Length: 259
Image (cartoon, rainbow, N blue to C red):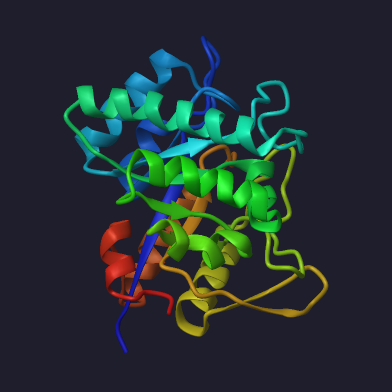
Protein backbone atom coordinates (compact mmCIF):
# COMPACT_ATOMS: atom_id res chain seq x y z
CA UNK A 1 0.00 0.00 0.00
CA UNK A 2 1.27 3.49 -0.85
CA UNK A 3 0.90 6.31 1.64
CA UNK A 4 0.76 10.08 1.35
CA UNK A 5 1.06 12.55 4.22
CA UNK A 6 1.37 16.29 4.69
CA UNK A 7 3.74 17.97 7.14
CA UNK A 8 2.84 21.33 8.66
CA UNK A 9 4.90 23.59 10.88
CA UNK A 10 4.23 26.69 12.99
CA UNK A 11 6.50 29.57 11.96
CA UNK A 12 6.85 33.35 12.18
CA UNK A 13 6.69 33.19 15.97
CA UNK A 14 9.20 35.90 16.85
CA UNK A 15 8.40 39.45 17.86
CA UNK A 16 10.28 42.65 17.08
CA UNK A 17 14.03 42.00 17.31
CA UNK A 18 13.46 38.64 19.02
CA UNK A 19 13.49 35.62 16.73
CA UNK A 20 12.09 32.19 17.59
CA UNK A 21 12.82 29.21 15.44
CA UNK A 22 15.00 28.73 12.33
CA UNK A 23 12.24 29.71 9.90
CA UNK A 24 14.46 30.35 6.89
CA UNK A 25 15.91 26.82 7.09
CA UNK A 26 12.73 25.06 8.21
CA UNK A 27 10.23 26.39 5.69
CA UNK A 28 11.86 24.71 2.64
CA UNK A 29 11.64 21.36 4.46
CA UNK A 30 7.85 21.33 4.93
CA UNK A 31 5.06 21.76 2.36
CA UNK A 32 2.70 23.62 4.70
CA UNK A 33 3.33 26.43 7.18
CA UNK A 34 1.15 28.17 9.75
CA UNK A 35 2.23 31.78 10.22
CA UNK A 36 1.64 33.59 13.52
CA UNK A 37 -0.71 36.55 13.11
CA UNK A 38 0.38 38.85 15.94
CA UNK A 39 -1.75 37.70 18.87
CA UNK A 40 0.57 35.08 20.43
CA UNK A 41 3.65 36.05 18.40
CA UNK A 42 4.59 37.72 15.16
CA UNK A 43 4.30 41.32 14.01
CA UNK A 44 3.78 42.99 10.62
CA UNK A 45 7.45 42.84 9.63
CA UNK A 46 7.79 39.19 10.62
CA UNK A 47 4.52 38.30 8.89
CA UNK A 48 5.78 40.02 5.73
CA UNK A 49 9.17 38.33 5.80
CA UNK A 50 7.84 34.87 6.65
CA UNK A 51 5.13 35.06 4.00
CA UNK A 52 7.70 36.01 1.36
CA UNK A 53 9.96 33.12 2.40
CA UNK A 54 7.07 30.66 2.29
CA UNK A 55 5.93 31.74 -1.17
CA UNK A 56 9.45 31.59 -2.57
CA UNK A 57 9.80 28.07 -1.13
CA UNK A 58 6.48 26.92 -2.58
CA UNK A 59 4.92 26.21 0.81
CA UNK A 60 1.20 26.44 1.46
CA UNK A 61 0.37 29.26 3.88
CA UNK A 62 -2.13 29.20 6.71
CA UNK A 63 -3.12 31.70 9.40
CA UNK A 64 -1.98 30.48 12.83
CA UNK A 65 -4.63 32.30 14.85
CA UNK A 66 -4.41 32.60 18.62
CA UNK A 67 -5.76 34.03 21.82
CA UNK A 68 -4.63 37.59 22.66
CA UNK A 69 -1.76 36.46 24.90
CA UNK A 70 1.70 37.63 23.87
CA UNK A 71 3.12 37.20 27.35
CA UNK A 72 1.96 33.59 27.61
CA UNK A 73 2.67 32.77 23.95
CA UNK A 74 -0.96 31.75 23.54
CA UNK A 75 -0.42 28.65 25.61
CA UNK A 76 -2.53 29.79 28.57
CA UNK A 77 -6.34 29.53 28.64
CA UNK A 78 -7.94 32.98 28.36
CA UNK A 79 -11.54 33.74 29.28
CA UNK A 80 -13.09 35.39 26.24
CA UNK A 81 -16.60 35.72 24.84
CA UNK A 82 -17.39 33.79 21.65
CA UNK A 83 -18.23 37.05 19.87
CA UNK A 84 -14.90 38.61 20.82
CA UNK A 85 -13.10 35.45 19.79
CA UNK A 86 -14.84 35.43 16.38
CA UNK A 87 -13.82 39.04 15.76
CA UNK A 88 -10.24 38.43 16.94
CA UNK A 89 -9.91 35.46 14.59
CA UNK A 90 -11.34 37.32 11.61
CA UNK A 91 -8.93 40.18 12.32
CA UNK A 92 -5.96 37.81 12.29
CA UNK A 93 -7.03 35.94 9.16
CA UNK A 94 -7.53 39.18 7.30
CA UNK A 95 -4.19 40.59 8.41
CA UNK A 96 -2.14 37.62 7.25
CA UNK A 97 -4.17 37.30 4.06
CA UNK A 98 -3.22 40.86 3.13
CA UNK A 99 0.49 40.03 3.28
CA UNK A 100 -0.07 36.82 1.31
CA UNK A 101 -2.02 38.63 -1.38
CA UNK A 102 0.53 41.42 -1.78
CA UNK A 103 3.30 38.83 -2.12
CA UNK A 104 1.38 37.08 -4.91
CA UNK A 105 0.23 34.04 -2.95
CA UNK A 106 -3.03 32.64 -1.66
CA UNK A 107 -4.09 31.78 1.88
CA UNK A 108 -4.91 28.06 2.05
CA UNK A 109 -5.92 27.22 5.61
CA UNK A 110 -6.43 28.32 9.21
CA UNK A 111 -5.08 26.60 12.31
CA UNK A 112 -5.65 27.65 15.94
CA UNK A 113 -2.59 27.90 18.16
CA UNK A 114 -1.87 26.67 21.67
CA UNK A 115 -4.67 26.73 24.22
CA UNK A 116 -7.17 27.97 21.64
CA UNK A 117 -6.74 24.68 19.78
CA UNK A 118 -8.24 22.62 22.62
CA UNK A 119 -10.74 25.33 23.61
CA UNK A 120 -12.30 25.14 20.15
CA UNK A 121 -12.40 21.36 20.30
CA UNK A 122 -14.04 21.17 23.70
CA UNK A 123 -16.49 24.08 23.44
CA UNK A 124 -19.31 24.29 20.91
CA UNK A 125 -19.46 28.09 21.28
CA UNK A 126 -15.75 28.56 20.60
CA UNK A 127 -15.87 26.06 17.75
CA UNK A 128 -18.68 28.04 16.14
CA UNK A 129 -16.72 31.27 16.62
CA UNK A 130 -13.78 29.72 14.77
CA UNK A 131 -15.87 28.30 11.94
CA UNK A 132 -17.95 31.47 11.55
CA UNK A 133 -14.81 33.56 11.14
CA UNK A 134 -13.34 31.21 8.54
CA UNK A 135 -16.55 30.64 6.58
CA UNK A 136 -17.33 34.34 6.59
CA UNK A 137 -13.93 35.17 5.14
CA UNK A 138 -13.42 32.29 2.68
CA UNK A 139 -15.24 28.93 2.85
CA UNK A 140 -12.56 27.36 0.65
CA UNK A 141 -10.04 27.60 3.49
CA UNK A 142 -9.21 24.29 5.17
CA UNK A 143 -9.39 24.31 8.97
CA UNK A 144 -6.76 22.29 10.87
CA UNK A 145 -7.91 21.68 14.42
CA UNK A 146 -8.15 18.97 17.08
CA UNK A 147 -10.90 16.56 17.98
CA UNK A 148 -14.42 17.42 19.03
CA UNK A 149 -16.80 20.16 18.01
CA UNK A 150 -15.27 21.66 14.84
CA UNK A 151 -15.49 18.39 12.93
CA UNK A 152 -19.09 17.85 14.01
CA UNK A 153 -20.08 21.35 12.91
CA UNK A 154 -18.09 21.57 9.67
CA UNK A 155 -21.03 20.74 7.40
CA UNK A 156 -23.12 23.51 8.98
CA UNK A 157 -20.60 26.04 7.64
CA UNK A 158 -19.66 24.33 4.39
CA UNK A 159 -16.06 23.92 5.55
CA UNK A 160 -13.41 21.21 5.29
CA UNK A 161 -12.13 20.49 8.80
CA UNK A 162 -9.22 18.08 9.32
CA UNK A 163 -7.37 16.84 12.37
CA UNK A 164 -3.59 16.60 12.61
CA UNK A 165 -1.17 14.12 14.12
CA UNK A 166 1.06 15.13 17.02
CA UNK A 167 4.51 13.64 16.64
CA UNK A 168 6.52 16.01 18.83
CA UNK A 169 3.93 16.32 21.64
CA UNK A 170 2.34 13.70 23.89
CA UNK A 171 -1.31 12.76 23.54
CA UNK A 172 -3.75 13.19 26.39
CA UNK A 173 -6.35 10.42 26.79
CA UNK A 174 -9.03 12.63 25.17
CA UNK A 175 -6.98 12.92 21.98
CA UNK A 176 -5.71 16.47 22.48
CA UNK A 177 -2.00 17.24 22.79
CA UNK A 178 -0.36 18.00 26.11
CA UNK A 179 0.72 21.62 25.70
CA UNK A 180 4.28 22.44 26.75
CA UNK A 181 4.68 26.02 28.06
CA UNK A 182 8.23 25.90 26.62
CA UNK A 183 8.71 23.46 23.74
CA UNK A 184 11.22 20.76 24.59
CA UNK A 185 13.59 18.98 22.17
CA UNK A 186 12.55 15.57 20.85
CA UNK A 187 14.38 12.40 19.95
CA UNK A 188 14.30 12.32 16.12
CA UNK A 189 13.84 8.56 16.03
CA UNK A 190 10.91 8.74 18.45
CA UNK A 191 9.28 11.34 16.21
CA UNK A 192 9.73 8.98 13.26
CA UNK A 193 8.24 6.07 15.23
CA UNK A 194 5.15 8.13 16.10
CA UNK A 195 4.79 9.37 12.53
CA UNK A 196 5.00 5.90 11.00
CA UNK A 197 2.40 4.55 13.42
CA UNK A 198 -0.02 7.35 12.60
CA UNK A 199 0.47 7.03 8.85
CA UNK A 200 0.27 3.24 8.72
CA UNK A 201 -1.99 2.34 11.64
CA UNK A 202 -3.97 5.56 12.27
CA UNK A 203 -3.04 5.19 15.92
CA UNK A 204 -1.06 6.72 18.76
CA UNK A 205 -0.52 6.05 22.48
CA UNK A 206 -1.68 8.50 25.15
CA UNK A 207 0.31 9.36 28.26
CA UNK A 208 -1.79 6.91 30.31
CA UNK A 209 -1.01 4.08 27.90
CA UNK A 210 -4.40 4.05 26.20
CA UNK A 211 -4.72 3.76 22.43
CA UNK A 212 -5.87 6.80 20.44
CA UNK A 213 -7.31 6.61 16.94
CA UNK A 214 -5.60 9.20 14.73
CA UNK A 215 -6.97 9.61 11.22
CA UNK A 216 -5.34 12.63 9.67
CA UNK A 217 -3.86 13.95 6.42
CA UNK A 218 -1.20 16.04 8.19
CA UNK A 219 1.47 15.80 10.89
CA UNK A 220 2.63 18.80 12.91
CA UNK A 221 6.21 19.81 13.71
CA UNK A 222 6.55 22.80 16.04
CA UNK A 223 8.91 25.45 14.75
CA UNK A 224 9.98 26.44 18.28
CA UNK A 225 11.30 22.96 19.08
CA UNK A 226 15.02 23.51 19.83
CA UNK A 227 16.17 20.73 17.47
CA UNK A 228 13.42 21.10 14.89
CA UNK A 229 15.81 21.13 11.91
CA UNK A 230 17.49 17.87 12.91
CA UNK A 231 14.12 16.27 13.60
CA UNK A 232 12.55 17.44 10.34
CA UNK A 233 15.48 16.39 8.18
CA UNK A 234 15.59 12.98 9.84
CA UNK A 235 11.84 12.55 9.45
CA UNK A 236 11.90 13.50 5.76
CA UNK A 237 14.74 11.06 5.12
CA UNK A 238 13.00 8.21 6.91
CA UNK A 239 9.61 8.83 5.29
CA UNK A 240 11.27 8.76 1.88
CA UNK A 241 13.06 5.51 2.74
CA UNK A 242 9.75 3.98 3.82
CA UNK A 243 8.08 4.98 0.53
CA UNK A 244 5.78 7.54 2.17
CA UNK A 245 5.22 10.57 -0.07
CA UNK A 246 5.14 14.01 1.55
CA UNK A 247 2.58 16.20 -0.27
CA UNK A 248 0.81 19.53 0.11
CA UNK A 249 -2.23 19.77 2.37
CA UNK A 250 -4.89 19.92 -0.35
CA UNK A 251 -3.44 16.85 -2.08
CA UNK A 252 -3.36 14.90 1.19
CA UNK A 253 -6.95 15.87 1.98
CA UNK A 254 -8.28 15.04 -1.50
CA UNK A 255 -6.38 11.74 -1.56
CA UNK A 256 -8.09 10.74 1.67
CA UNK A 257 -4.82 10.46 3.56
CA UNK A 258 -5.45 9.30 7.09
CA UNK A 259 -8.99 8.07 6.44
